[in-house]
Amino acid sequence: MGDFNNGAVKAAIIGGEYVMTDSVVEVINPSTGGVLATTADCGPAEIQLAVDAARSTQKKWRRVAQVERIRLVREVGRLILRDLEDLASAESLQTGKPIAQGRRDIEITARYFDFYASVAESFYGSSFSLTDSIEVTTRFEPHGVTAHIIPWNYPMQILGRSLAPALVTGNCAVVKPAEEAPLTALMLAALVREAGLPDGAVNVVTGMGETAGAALSASPGIDHMSFTGSVEVGRLIGRAAAESLIPVTLELGGKSPNIVFPDADLDKAIPVIANSILQNGGQTCSAGSRLLVHASVHDEVVNRLAAHFAAVRVGPALSDPDLGPLISQMQRQRVLGFIDLGRDEAKVLSGGRSLSGGTFQEGFFVEPTLIDDVPQGSRLYQEEVFGPVLAVTRFESTEEAVELANATDYGLVAGVWTANISTAHQMVRDVVSGQVFVNTYGASGGVELPFGGFKKSGFGREKGVEGIRGFVQVKTAIVAS
Ligand code: NAP
Ligand code: MG
Image 1 (cartoon, helix red, strand yellow):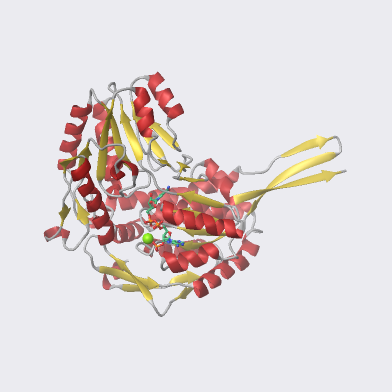
Image 2 (image 1 turned 45 degrees about the horizontal axis):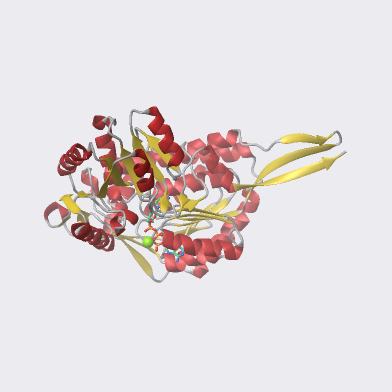
């Protein structure tokens, strides 16, 4: 692992072989701005090899007894935990996330393999008698070759949540990690082999989205796609899936609100609301990036949040700060642009500056930023910032809270803070969102919780017991005597 700092060269993994390309992609350490490693810059030729390797392996893998597939997938989880420290440092170095978060991400990834191994233990079709002489049975069959296109913000967790159910149900995978954060996907593929899954069960093609990603999504050899990323690229992936007529799961962005009613327990709410936007530097699809707060508690809530933000320790990933850097210089410029918009259209209450020099070196740091009185029409209210920037808006009534909560194109997650059970039920019913938390937010990794978007946050569900269904198709056998 330590070799990353020497700019190690990391090849793609195709059919169990390491494959290098003439051109390479640099992986930057966002905590320092230095080069961490270089990876293969895969194109159509490598994609073709990877899809072919997955295809030929899948023909055998689908015939392996389910109990054996379960055993091997569970073993992957065990090996991930064995290598927790190495994986966590690599994850933190390439993404800039605090090392404690890196460790947590790896534990959650391991849990996906263990969890889906357990789910598969009782995941069977059904049988019934249609008439006295006709028996019907349903079987769950794998799609074949599954493509997994992964973003840079939670590289391991997001790969684990689709790879584990894909493998355990008899699919073989081609993975395109994000160009910014491909290192742990390569490490995971090596662990999959060590666990005893066949070569070609998991192939990792590193490189750029426009080339490697586009070639993978357009490949006639894939049978299913799991995409997690932006709405913009999600639309391209949806089009490619339509062209090939294959199922696709789109896990896209969010502009998720925490909604604070006057009777909320603020001691409990404030740290959770702050963490929901500061975790991973706000670069979380389900970040609590909007705060809707009742006018009667508005001043107290923003004052307490401003104090919380002021105490946040910012620093490089491995120093285990509260807040690490953003992923790239480009992302930092984008975030600062939104903060400028906040200065024009609303009130920046705290933070707002980028940080450099000293321990920040050439890293991509931005202070935690609280922006008050953000109007509904502002891009700051409507668009994903993907930075530690919380947009606050006040409301007067429950009806207005619902209206404001639903007033964006997204619908991924919402948090409701109230002691009133009727208000809680009403919000769960009326907020248009894939998950609604009441008096909590984010719940411990959420492996068990079905997750996915309403509206432009996407479609299909991953995670939880539900998540396994997307990786199989149902075959119905009708047998007459
Ligand atoms: P992104 O730009 O959409 O990229 C996601 C992946 O798609 C990357 O691997 C990227 O490759 C690849 N890609 C880019 N262009 C492509 C193309 N033309 N064809 C095929 N693949 C292509 O997203 P990101 O910036 O990495 O991640 C941030 C976004 O992900 C945010 O919008 C966030 O909300 C969303 N997200 C959603 C969830 C969820 O579960 N709902 C979870 C996490 C993140 P390269 O980067 O290598 O070019
Ligand atoms: Mg990208």
